[in-house]
Length: 187
Ligand SMILES: [Ca+2]
Image (cartoon, rainbow, N blue to C red; front, side):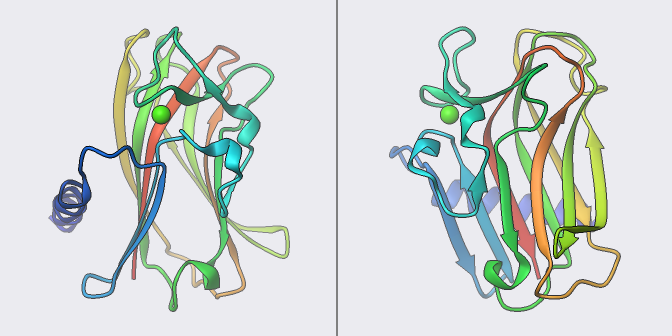
């Protein structure tokens, strides 16, 4: 039930913030709801947006068309890891997050790929916690954009000096695209 409520709230926030202007990267603080919402449509990755790394995986693509605009991230046999959100916990917000909801759109060129969304928590470059949300069962059909969403719960105690990374990991060796990521930290 809690899961459903969070998604409903995130959905309301998303639509209430949407308008006809394309959004490249947006960080919205919602103090009343204790949420930090981050969206990235990949249209301006080349401008080196703070908190985002691995820009080389974001390309202009026509075949397939990006989910939004002209750009999407491609992962394949030479680029296993996607465009990545990477930030110290203390730089995201004051306090420690309880959970993070990650959603977006994926386009696979092979059915049921070995492909997952990864949440990585590290301290001084040493791994502290690591979670994977596999998408193989969601990507049963190739050649179309499919929406995904997942909530990662921080069940190990965090501290503000730790770093959080969120990215996709493609072990399928075939091209898989990702676009329009949304990350919502809840405190
Ligand atoms: Ca895009």
